[in-house]
Picture (cartoon, rainbow, N blue to C red):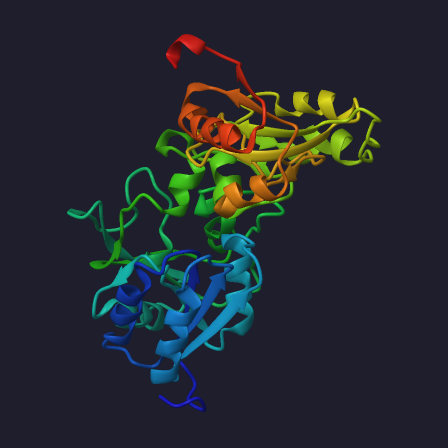
Length: 359
């Protein structure tokens, strides 16, 4: 198909940091028995070589187009950017860590063609490497890789509205109001299981949660967050009174305090230091649990130290004191900071907030 040909289906591929998987996803699309497709890849500010890998495929295959967002904006915004560029009347999805089987697109498009009243078609899916479902996976929403639907004016819920792993709330619920769903009953794709999946960064019972999600995607702003396994949190309302006030001017005896580790519950309590005229910087453990508050902090007034080169930053701008606020999960990282503090001659304070005996 050349650029002038009109595709039967537009496939949207949102991607963030999935360079290790994306070749397999692309090859599974290029091997489809239905060849009249176009692919819109939305690189959502990936920190790896995703865009370079896709660009090489785009040079080989004119059906592939790449859209690079300048920073990570979240799944909903990435998919909406893809919808704006899609040309076909049928939309399908291929996350960059998932896989199509050979007849996947052909079967979904054939079902929609045969049932004009059907608004959305979905396939069976392999998951957890060996398990299969003829339709929706028990306990899960319909997964992106399973679905093709007719183009509508509906838009995906974006991060500025809500962060959730529930795709029903993000999009499928709006589609249900448009017409019936139908399934092929054929297992024709795989929802690939691995630790870096988005839903794992969101669900508290999978090692994710609000704070791990923020840290993974470097989200600067407060969030409205509700995973399918936890309680809703509205940081916009919770922290507005802190964000809307100006920074406190530096006091004559102000200290440059490096907050380190994690802040757990009630993280805004550190602003008591800022309100005394001290300057606050933050450097956070990379292995946070859902209750370990880590940056970028949603209430402002704390400058982030770059995580990828923190040693150089501390040697260039040594703080007056390193204040390690700890639950046990952050102790190994705090110990790294302790060793560095000895090298640069900076005092180090251990502050065990909860359960020091666990350490």
